[in-house]
Length: 361
Image (tube, rainbow, N blue to C red; front, top):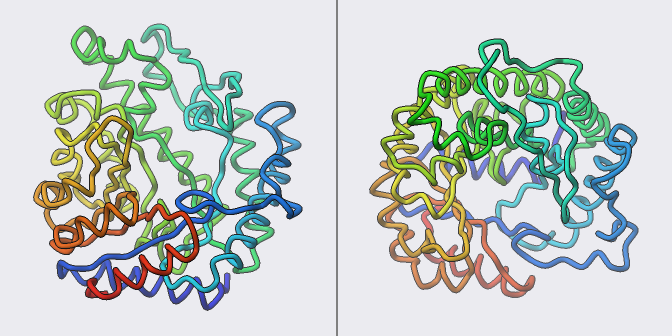
């Protein structure tokens, strides 16, 4: 695949950011439609025209991929004058339910722009035999969508393989919140389930990677480019546990996946300051993201603490331009990739100029 000069130049900036561990480096990504409003109203890709998360999923895989590509191309043109490191990223999506339904096939419940998978593992009978069924309809859907992206890529966008649940999150999805009792009541069954979840994630990642390949010798994940192969995994469930529970149950199966691929990108939430050090202790991590959430401290306001807990691991978070301005001196104490919330192109340009005056990259 031959990518556009714009994409290649931004990947080069990520290469520099990752290879140089000197503190004081800040990369900025402005994501149209995610961190900045974008108006599709008078285009053929108006948001309301996207297929809903209902109906015949198999007829929708290619259509959803093509509409996603169209929106990426529109957003790329819309932000063509921004000197940030945004990569137009396309990924497999059918709501959060898909993140577990490929493992244990269930009918997804459509929601507002997402889907939900009901917890279906009522007990641990036969858990040692759990594995992904290649004939699972959701496996087929994911592979169809991956092929559609690959077949329609002219080098104007990059592919984000899949946003996986980490093993503890996947176990939480298929077992439900009974999992949190099981840590105490059925610890050996939990360990077995987590190991099967790790195997499922490895299987699905390998199947998709065989279709899409890597991007310039690396992985586009979480709006970043990382060297080598680095699957996305969310560690949300550990944020609701003690660090001790994560060390005892969650860390080893996640490490198993990292060891298989030689790296990973991990996402968790601002509820999890108490478990951040344990997650950062995973060997082989490429980048660690803490998301900004309602009713929680903003990660950027506690960035010095997160740097201390993370060692020299590059971090990622999301915040407003005002939050970043207020914390710029603390942000300069480490390396961080910021998904920046702005209200307009003009604010985005101002923010990029401001960071450019401070950052060493």
